[in-house]
Structure formats: C-alpha cells, structure tokens
Length: 168
Image (cartoon, rainbow, N blue to C red):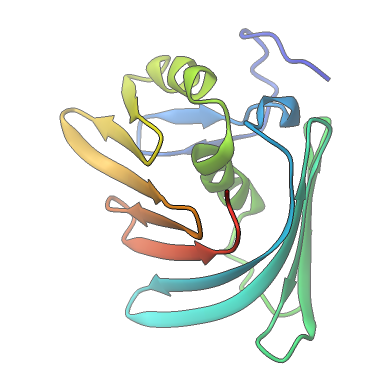
C-alpha cells in the first residue's frame, strides 16, 4: 500500500508537543531485516533488557519480543496502516506507534523521513552513521549506527536504547 502525501488518516506520533510524524509505509525501509536484536533501554532511571526478533520488509514490520530467558512477552505488527500490539507484560502506556516511529527513524529511507519531518518544522541531518532530528536548533533525537549496534537517544522525552545485532 502506498500513501499519498496528503493522506492524514495514517497513524502518527508527536515527536514534540507541536510536531506530528506520520508513519511511513513499510516499503520505505532502506533494506529488509530478518534478525534477532538485543535491546537495552533506559527510561526514568530504570533499565530494561529484552530480545526482539524483527522481520521488516517492503510489506510489513513484525517484532516478537522476548525476555532474557526467552519467554515471549509481546508481538507488534504493522501492515497496510494497521498496527497491533499484543502483550500482557508491557505497560499499557507504551503506544505501538512510538515503537514503529523510532524504528522508522533508524531504518527507513532518510530522504523520505526528511520530507515527512519538514512538514512539521523538523529537520533530519543524516549520513551513513548518524541521524539527528532537530527542532528549533536543538537535537531532540540522535541515532548512532555501527555495524553491530544502533544507539537511539530521545533527548526531549528522556529515554534511550541500544540495539545490538548484525546491521551490516
């Protein structure tokens, strides 16, 4: 499914209090992923560790989340503008649209991300290893990509996480 630029029925998130980011369709991923990712996250002084099996291609994004012992703790699915998160363990205040938006900022076509961000006064600075989302001159999101890790920091919302896996 391809969305037009004017289609405001797409799911979105607020990257700032005033700036919306409409989710891009799955086909805008830079390259397909089918891999395990170890995730270490920090939010409000708490650290979290889990594993995600990520399958993302030009038609869908699927994540299966596991705890450190390998027990399933949830599934996230995004396809054709529909989002589903099922988990009895994850806090209810976690909105799946935000997980997808963070994923897209890390792994989707930077040219199209920039176009979408510019609609709400945000800027994307991107090269092969670093992406920065800027609002009014301040870096609100920074993404550092290496061959075996991706570090995501949301300075505005106060959380960060590191994904480890084979991103080469």
